[in-house]
Length: 229
Image (cartoon, rainbow, N blue to C red; front, side, top):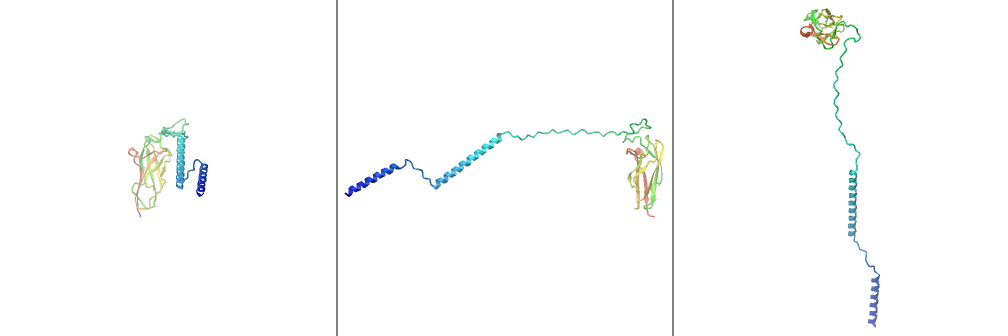
């Protein structure tokens, strides 16, 4: 009797086992460990980074292939400097005048200017006291071919000015061959003892300068010795 019950129980358990086996699904979901999940996440991130890099490179290549609006610099041709212009020629005399008394040389031409020393006051080496006032005169002849007018001056060319304004006036018109006297007034001897010199030349109304002697190279001079009494 006991064996029969045992047999029945085993049979029932076997049927139950068959029933439970028939109720299970055909496939089971895979079971992932924590390590498997980490590997899957890292693989996904790497794939996304690779995809982003590829997309960025593709965008850069597309931008490079597009035409640019940046202008290309062109070489500017060098311009030659303008030609040097000559100074305008000065007009001599009054262009409206109907008569000319005498030809006038253009500025810078001293071929018609010449002078001779005829006489002078205050001989060279005259002794004076410091601060003494004096004057000097020269009688000169126009030995050239051009007339001197009242715009001519006797001009200091070097040395001591003796308190003057460095100019002496021609008071009259001097035609070729005539003489005139030119005087420097209100000159003052220096206050320090010593020998002092100055040299003076004629200056035309155009600024041409000339003296006397060979080639008009000598200047009219003043030479004094300053001594205390």
